[in-house]
Length: 128
Ligand SMILES: [Cu+2]
Image (cartoon, rainbow, N blue to C red; front, side):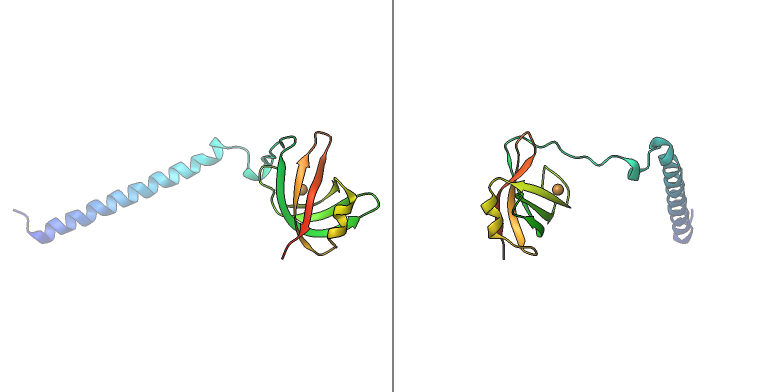
């Protein structure tokens, strides 16, 4: 009949064996990954959702440029959910007087609508 010390040794051996074989499987699996996905993630195109025409999309950003004569504004904006990631870009405003409410450097909230012929800003105001 084995004493308790021998039983303990047996347990330790079993644990070591299980652990090392689990590690081995892990290595094998990760070695297969490059074959399963030959395209590196960096080369995948960025998913850009298509806008819903007429839907107001709320956004936030900082005013970079204002052109009151032509009626457009450049905003460094945060992500606009369902429309686009964060970026710096220009939009025409629906009505030029909207541009009188803000100045360059202001943090603003705004509403963008895709008209079908392009996006316009329909609401614009300074925040904070
Ligand atoms: Cu944008």
